[in-house]
Length: 251
Image 1 (cartoon, helix red, strand yellow):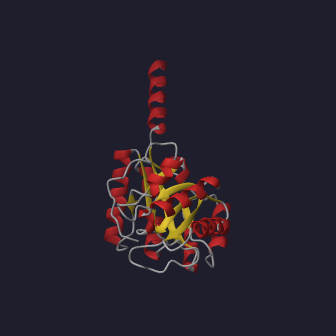
Image 2 (cartoon, helix red, strand yellow):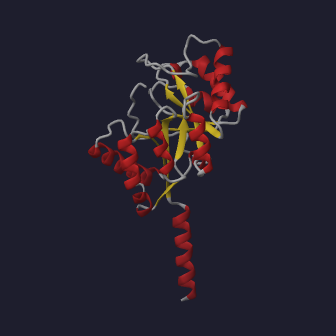
Image 3 (cartoon, rainbow, N blue to C red):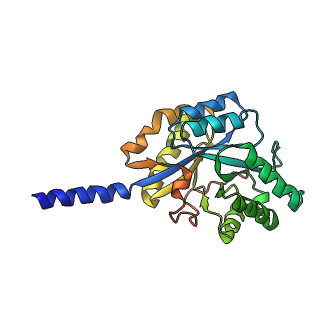
């Protein structure tokens, strides 16, 4: 009887140690007062803050105090020509300008442990800018998450070659913020996490998304999925997976 009990405990321990994991990153934080809603999410949600924004420093400090992992959401030039805001990196900038801009961006977001690209469907395709950016992140000991805004991105490849700790976004949760679409993507996120073992998902501080997450994130525990900070997945070999939901939006 004691042997059976011990085996049961061992099986439970093994099952728990192999629980599926999701790193959920909330992007685009810093411009709107409504972005403060991210602070009501579980502390295991990762917050990616835009540089040089009116509320960025305040929300990074507040998020860190509540236990959130903080990232830098680094603006990069998109194919659609959308304005980048302060700290944006473009293909007309020199090496010195890009390196200095990345350092300034890092300094503007307290407690940043990693970075991911904001938009970037143009710049992430270019070898030299990606080299300069990744070398700077490596010097500052930041990991990188490729937001995968284009299938032709070279950001992750360059980070990997330089030894910058790397992950790749596998799912966008809220390209469509309708209730039906959020539920569909949330279910897909759960399914992929179970299939792959772990998953990097990105969402945004839209009011609709915040309401949905507050009402539904507890479902992950019921599904046997751990919600973890992004850096918790770094030692796990998902960095080289492109994911099964690449949904590119050319940001």
